[in-house]
Structure formats: structure tokens, C-alpha cells
Amino acid sequence: MKIIIAGAGAMGSRFGLMLHRASHEVVLVDGWQEHIDAINSNGLQANFNGEEVVENISAYNQNEIAKIDFSADLVILFTKAMQLDSMLQSINSLLHEDTKVLCLLNGIGHEDTIKKYVPYKNIFLGNTMWTSGLQGPGKVKLFGNGSIDLQNLAQGQEEIANTIVEALNQANLNAKYSSNILSSIYKKACVNGSVNGL
Image 1 (cartoon, rainbow, N blue to C red):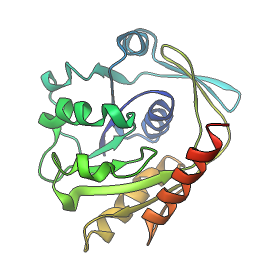
Image 2 (tube, rainbow, N blue to C red):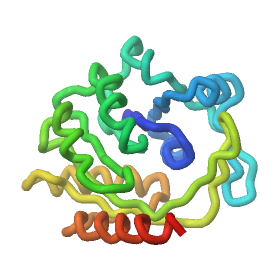
Image 3 (tube, rainbow, N blue to C red):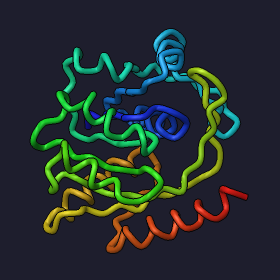
Image 4 (cartoon, rainbow, N blue to C red):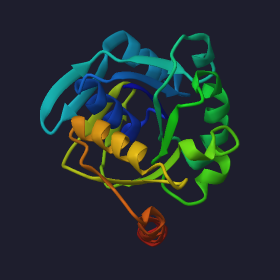
């Protein structure tokens, strides 16, 4: 599967690395040029549960991504909420009518922004309990295990949602289909809103 990781910070780098190691064709897109340069020069470096690994994954600045020839099957969104609209504008030329978009951002209501750029039937929402730490440009620390719940927004797209689950599980990302993803998303938003401040 051809996958764009839109927002290649700590979590985006984790997913990009794990999907790349599972033989998916992955492109990282971010707005932090120093991070992008480090990945392109030295590979994406990770302490992966105590093992030092390096994966050569192409990384692009979101302001230059429109120049490349890459028609994505799946986009996984990992930007900050305030950066979501500009990221979708940047990658819009790489989306085709069948490109699926999985939003794994924290928070609620992101589908309202996504549907300005993506047909409703192609939007999938998810919630992830994976963790990751960014140690510096091009370097991440990946520790522990996690999981993903995801669901299609439009009715009748359950089979496609399960295809995405299968692709994620090829990378050992512990994904499963949810019949009520909004409940999971709201629960996590409540936890983040109360605990993170402390």
C-alpha cells in the first residue's frame, strides 16, 4: 500500500517506521525542515524498544510535496489540530478519488475540516493508544505497545475500514474495527483535557 504520513513528528514517525518495516511504500510529510533534512540525510533513527534501528524513508516538506509523483492509497493524519487545514491543502494534489484518509489526531471535530478536501466516504476516524517520543531532528524513541480503534464515517465502508485494519496489523500496530469510534475519541479527549493539564 502507498501511504502518506501527514505530520511526521513523534507519532507519525513511529507509524511511518513500522509501516515501512512491513514493506508498505511510505512517504513522510512534515513542516519541520531540520527534521526532514535529518531523515533524508541519515535515515529515520529510532530506539525501538531498546534496539537502535535506522530506516531510509523519503521525507518531504509539506510546501514541496505537490512536486512529487506519488498517488496515495492511504493518508494517515498526525498533524496538530491547528495545522490540519494547511496540511490537507499541501497534499491535496496527491489525493485521488479512491484515497482513504485516516485521522488519528487527538481532539474532536476534525472530520469537518477533512471533508472540505476528501469525499465523505473516504474518511475514517481512529483513536490510538501508542506512544512515542521525539528526541531531536530525525530521532525518535519508541517504547511499549499500543493499539488502534478505527471506523468508517460513511455507511457501507466497513469492508474498506477492515482493509485499513489489515494493513496496519501487517505492521503490528494492533488495529481493530470499532462500531462506535466517537465514544472512544470523546473518552480520550476527556482524559487528555483533564490529565494533561496536571
